[in-house]
Length: 148
Image (cartoon, rainbow, N blue to C red; front, side, top):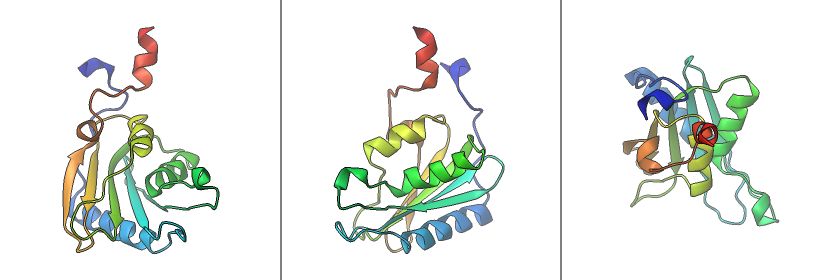
């Protein structure tokens, strides 16, 4: 329902913010610690106040203890007091397809609303944009707990 939204719909990032967001996601990818999968991923998150927090995937020999780039960026933003987001860019070395967030990351992203953009990139820098609600349709969020 429209009135149940946790956060107001944010405006899409300006062109210069978008280019910075994409660049920061590429830079974050270069910091990935992925000795097991050899699949580096970077993410950059634009807050409603215009700050950018980046993250990379960090693997662990105990595989289940690793963390994805998207969740790293979100946790960094949350730890600095930000809970309203406008956009996220995700980067990998995939050449033929656009990188997409895993299901766990989609659910963590969903915790903070559905009305923000996710820029999915290819290694060549091309991208497509999806609304979070497109990536996780019929989702469960904090407002659903109020319906009980």
